[in-house]
Amino acid sequence: MLKLNNLARVESISAKENMTSLKVTCKGVGKSGKEYTDFKGFVTLFGQAHEKAVDLNVGDSIKILDFGVTTNYAKGTNYTNCNILDMEIVPGENIEYIDEELPFS
Image (tube, rainbow, N blue to C red; front, side):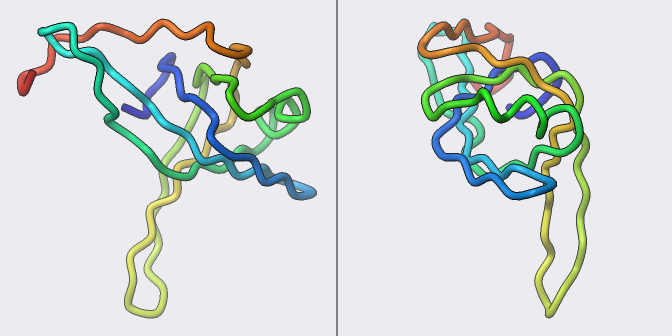
């Protein structure tokens, strides 16, 4: 799930002058202990997160410290934008997923 203090693994990076776009995967662990992917998609880094992205590599994870979600409607399509404003880089494979009590596990 894309939420505060959760980890997202970086699958791809596309840097621009004032923002960075990432393809990320978030995983969770259900009651049975089985790991599953619960978010896979694109996020945009702005502000402090964009500045920190210069040290980011594919395969690293990020801890989401501040983010917002916006929607807009253009040419008959609704778009949802996940914008990360601050993050902490977790290098390489050093990932610990948050174990949550999920109603569908």
